[in-house]
Length: 157
Image (cartoon, rainbow, N blue to C red; front, side, top):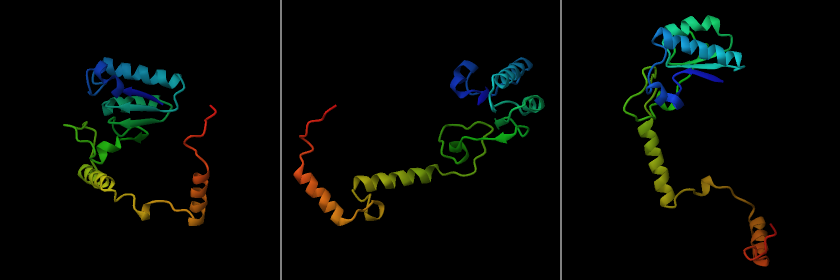
């Protein structure tokens, strides 16, 4: 899968987390990159943080599926980072293309704190959340442990 426009791993080289393709020259570079990815055999391409008009103009010319993230409605599909769309991220700002469908950050933190408290207090896992075995099998296993000294047995590596 190819990726054009804002490539987060290269954001610093692109001037930060900014929309790409706002000038004719930078839009042409996105087009060249997309055509090169298609020619190289990519099965799909992600258009990220690209003006909708650029994606609109490119879509009739791209033969592989295009997934948009901040690239308008013309793409074949849409994607958002689930941390953004569920309100998990707590950064100072979200990209303009992010629509939050829920705010679950505080609930997640609450759940993690409850889990950590139960682990520290040795209340988790309890009998409901562990696997059991036949008591006779456990007794046989314990007998085995008493007969064999696994801790001092030589290991043949």
